[in-house]
Figure 1 (cartoon, rainbow, N blue to C red):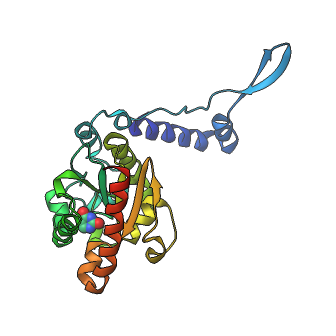
Figure 2: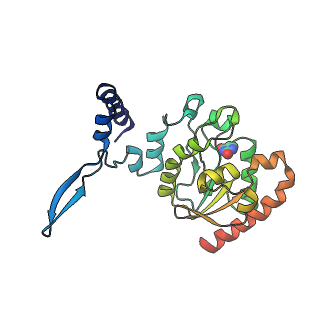
Length: 245
Ligand code: URA
């Protein structure tokens, strides 16, 4: 069911509630039970839900291009309001390695591409240091639209955008994921742990193994963390060599 239709149904139900009150409104939404006679027993079975699960068009996309075309005008959360460009993701559509950041910054919002600003240049260097070319991996963010003033994306914004990332995973099928920074790690893995406690461990998202390290923007602010990042990405490379190579 598309969002337009959902909105129309919700509006119709609201009108009903106004006219008939809560009772009928709730009654309409309840699942009904039907008497069914099976194997000589009489049992009450639930009828299918009023709104059975129906896939949206983008959930059926067969390629990244198709998916991007179907979601690039998304208005599901408040972040679309200040967006210049929707930042879908970039890279090898068959990548074994995926890199996940937090959300687009000013330059990314201008160009419509992830990690193209200063943090992006550092990311390219980090990848090079562990023998990955930027073009061979796939780079995306937990949220696809720039949060105003580069604020941290809110949990509900990440949650709203996460199905798009899941769909990207379904199409790309990466085997290992490098997750950049605490916000991206929490949004992706649904964890409340600190970055320190997550570093060096292997998590799972969809069918991929995930490791977490510092966000490159944090390394620009605090170069003392570069050593820790270097240790993390070497472990990430080892994981890749074990699983993929
Ligand atoms: N920071 C992110 O998390 N993602 C980008 O794309 C750029 C900066």
